Length: 316
Image 1 (cartoon, one colour):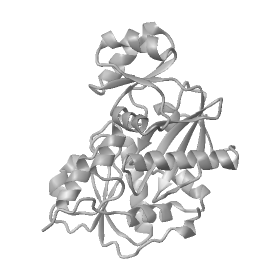
Image 2 (tube, rainbow, N blue to C red):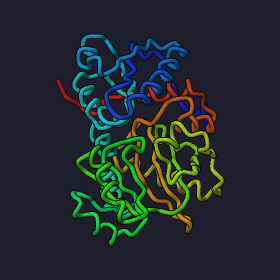
Image 3 (cartoon, rainbow, N blue to C red):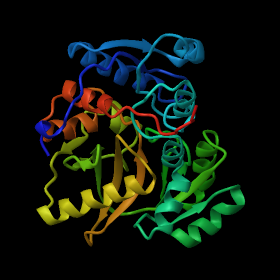
Image 4 (cartoon, rainbow, N blue to C red):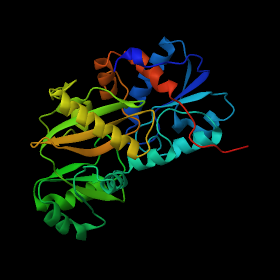
C-alpha cells in the first residue's frame, strides 16, 4: 500500500476534533489531538477543538459541525459512549461504531469473541476476587499478565512471575476496573499492525528491555526500538497482517485502528488486543506505519477523516 492508493475527499465542512477527556489517557489524547488539529489545518480543513471536560453536549449541539475526528483515548472515547452521542446528534465521526468500540475496549469480551471464532488469543481467566488467583495460576502457569479489562496504554498491567505477587497485581488492576483478567504469558516478540480502511499497513516490531511494552516504554523511555516493516519474511508478514484484519473485522471495527500481537518461538501469532483510537502524535505507531507505506502525517489525518460516517439509520 502507498499513500497514492488512498482517495481523499475534499469539502469536509466544519470539523470538530475531540481531544482530552477525563480518562487516564488524557495527557496522551491532548498530544494526539493537537497533532491531528495541526495536520487538518495544514490541509485547509475548517477544524476546531472540543475537550469533553469543558462540556460535551453543549459543545457539540447547534455548532454546525459536519464531521467529528475522535482523538479521545480510553474510556469515554474508545468505549462507544461518544460514538453513541454522535449518532444521536447525526454528526459523522471517525473510527469504529458503538458496538465495535465497546467490544474492542473490553479486553475480556474481545478475547471471548476471537476465541469463539477460532482466532488465536492467549488463554485467560476472569479474576472476580482474590479467591480466583490461585486457580488462575494453576491453570495458566507463570509468568502471566494481570490486566484491567477496560483500560488502555498498559495502565494497571502487571507481569506476575511469582504466585505471591498475584494479590498486589490483582488489586492494582481492580482499582482501575471491576473486571480483571489473567492472561497466559506468550514468550516471543511483540508486533502491532495498523489498519486504515480495509488495508493493513506495514507491521511494526516493538522491542523493549522492560518486561513488556508498558506505559513507560510507550511514552517516556528512550530505549524502546521499533522496526517497520519488521524483519519477518514476506509470507509471515502477509499472514500476520491477514490475521490482524480478520480480528479487526470480527469485532465490527471500521475506518482505522490497530491490532497488537505476540509471535512465539514457533512462529505462531497471538491476538492481544484491539485499539480503535490509537495514538496520533508524530511518534505514535499508526503514523509510523503510514510513513513506511509512503503516507505523510497530514495525508494520514485526511484519510482517517475521509472515513467519517454514521453507523445507524435512525429513520425520519
